[in-house]
Amino acid sequence: MAYAAITYRVRPGHEKEINEIFSGFTRPESPVLTDEDGKPSGLLLGTGLFLKDDVVVRVIHYEGSLEDVARHMSVQEGVREAERRLLPYLAAPRDTSTPQGFLEHFGTASMETVQQFSLPPHVADELRRATAL
Image 1: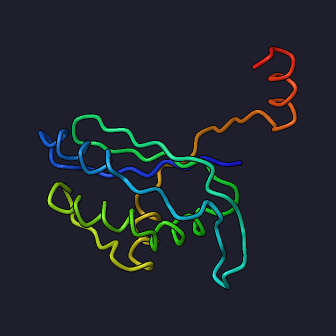
Image 2: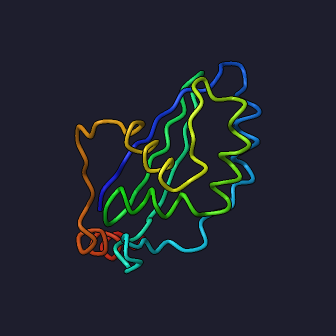
């Protein structure tokens, strides 16, 4: 399982509007990722969106490749709608209207991974059982 952080700048002073855009966000139709040939290649396990002043960071938890995550997200209607509504608030315009544009944005906006850590699933399951979670 991997994590990615995608960052972009927005115009300051529009936190309320940006929060409103994402408060009604429609989740992807399926968490199953596919490769370029349409074959299942991984899972979108979760996402989080963070906003501070003029910086937005989307953290993505996934299995598979980040390219497959970007391809998957690029065709989700909820993502496309949020991208359209976000355009007026971006500090630097970007073209995410096509899958290729979305892939390019992911490539340039991805933060460098310094460290990642996840409990192995079997360890998490054992801890849940041991602590009655």
